[in-house]
Amino acid sequence: MNPLLERLQPYPFEKLRALIGGHTPNADLRPINLSIGEPKHPTPMLVREALAKGLDGLAVYPATVGTPELRQAIAGWLERRYGIPRLDPESQVLPVNGTREALFAFAQTVLAPNDRVVCPNPFYQIYEGAALLAGATPVYGEPQSWAGVTLLYVCSPANPTGKVLDLQGWKRLLELSDRHGFAIASDECYSEIYFDRPPLGSLEACHKLGRSYERVVAFSSLSKRSNCPGMRSGFAAGDPALIRKFLLYRTYHGSAMSLAVQQASIAAWGDEKHVIENRRLYAEKFDAVVPILNAEKPDGGFYLWLRTPGDDADFARRLHREYNVLVVPGSYLARDAAGGNPGKNHIRVALVASTGECVEAAQRLQRFAQNG
Image (cartoon, rainbow, N blue to C red):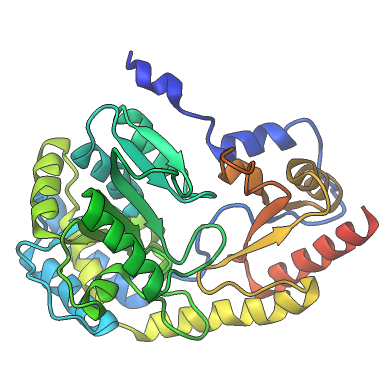
């Protein structure tokens, strides 16, 4: 048995199940689950139709590198979305089975045992798991020293805080990468859910700063953008040297996307109408919920990151028991570091249910906070 598995922490949802497992929620109220960031808006018809038309491809082994048509579609979307020169689809774009597996696998490509990996804090738990199973050491938040750092995970818009990294922030990180030689894995899966200004992407930042994509790889997917998390479709794009090594790893790892999913992905990346409608639906929810909770709207993404009056785990447990609303304790999404656990006394609320359910959940949450 791989001894590195013993280093893994319980996953947040495993901890959440244990937290609420000892009680029965209020049966007089319908359950509202705002714990998981799973889109609930309908998958666009054009994607579903393309998937159905591509079913003949199930009789064919797909290539790990993906079809030229899909790589072209991704390169075209990146050019339109970020205003960057079109990437070379052959050397700078690689289709992946969603960002989750790709962000994990990328660490196995670039890390050696005992390397250091810097993660944001709070953070998407895959970053930590990827580092630990590569035999590396995760560092949570800004390190005191960047010596020995081989990989930096960036998430913008951030899960769970919704913050977006601006150009000066990117400039600083890229200069640190130049100085210390670490790779940057930029998780941009929430990039198309925003309210005012489109979030700056890593490749866009490189272009604006007049530099190459050396040591930078952007990761994005169709799960949130196009409401098709079940397709498991995304891409990695950027530094051709890193993409080449990543393809080598994936060729042995067996991570090829079915031709049917590739066909559906081409349709999704080529259409923006459904993405605009998706943003409108999320904006409607935030406009309805934020005033009820007197909360701060995030820069991007579909989470509210709310402060609790006391212990976040106890708050989430009692909210579920008394008001049948399920959210994630913020401390489950972070680690103790200098200054303590930055998720402490916070909860993450995923506004993925219908607007009516989100409003009802917000009203219950407000009553609980006032009466609890």
